[in-house]
Length: 121
Image (cartoon, rainbow, N blue to C red; front, side, top):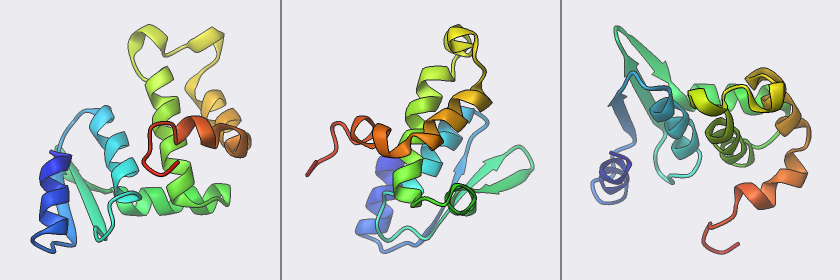
């Protein structure tokens, strides 16, 4: 689905997209891609009867933690992957909120790990 959005943004010059999903994994990926897809200004997630603005969520989290959204979103996605599914949701007897807070507090140390595999890094 994100390949289709990227094509629409790059070749058709669309600036907004709506993703219909109920899965938290997709919502987290939307928060990541809104900060890494040049030209995409708004990315909405339709979950049941509501529309979640992934672009506003990414911006609000960046403001809350006083960091750049492009740096924060890969860390959030990486942390979510480690804690997101049922089998690892209580990693080392620590909950998700504590894991996210610790990751944000140590964002500078974790950035190389979050950027692993990115082109140009």
